[in-house]
Image (cartoon, rainbow, N blue to C red; front, top):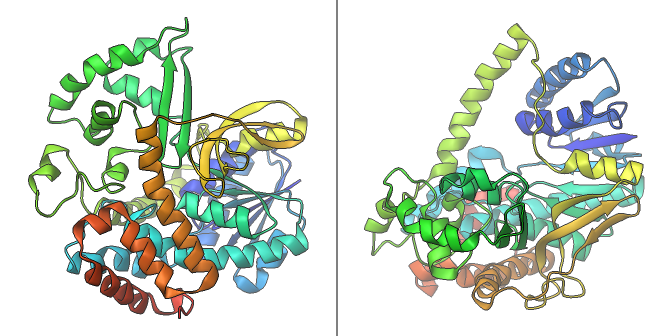
Length: 439
């Protein structure tokens, strides 16, 4: 059994996912093939994962592959491929994604999923995924591709529509959604044995149902507590709680993410909203800086103190692999095409996030039915951007990048149409060779 990890220089994430596999009796004998274009980060991952492997009894084997010229060998014969790449790195491309829009007065929080930052990240990444797919179709055609890279819906949607690779998009926001909400509202006693239904699109899936272990609907009590929670000046989840008040349902991903997915909260004409909803502008930039510095310290500490006991990451990847190998059954929140209208009031070409059953015969997305109309409408605002961005990546037509930016809820609510076009042109120029040529 072989697991190839693309972007293994993402050391913390690689350690979480591969650590889960190494702690599994079913997966621990795998060949773990690590691939990255950054030699230093790849070596750091190798050192830490070798120590982790030894702490689990020296099972399995780690192989390292550096550079594009060795990519095909990294993939050859793989049963599973995990994707966690970041094309263009923090410096320069993430910085560009934030600083160029800021010149136009357009502010972001995370910029990796929707908005102008998400659009540019997708356009950088899809050409690389196209190369991955071409190699996989040649050297591991039956492998399952786990995409963890954002923008999740755009990248997974591209892979499923335009390649022959068996792909599922995975994000940890689904499994943490209902527990987070109950914790915020002081309802932790209702968490054990709870049952929930989550569906929509990545980072904007809706907690459609939440019941306690006895089947009692928890939403009435949740809604009674929302105003008090939002009155707390220290509350960091005010946007999502406001979604419950305005739209009736809680959403999967964090408030800092969802603040920039709509035209409501980050508005230059209403700067007071930033403090009112505790919106952390430029948060991803600061996270990147902190993570880089933290990793340097952590790496030295791990070298000195050794690897401690692995704590399960909560990511879905290892569970899916186990189910496929053994034929056991597991359920995950997966990102798949809306084929057959799994969500009936969203288009079939959309990438949706729905419950999926996994067993030895593969991935089986579950039919959900219709979303509440207001939730479907919010999702469609994002899906329009997803589809237009994918169209731009496939056709190499610059006009579709303009269309995606124009239709983006936050960008379109802040900038006039001429400024949007100029912003896109400036971003394309600033990204240089990290983007293909658009005509």
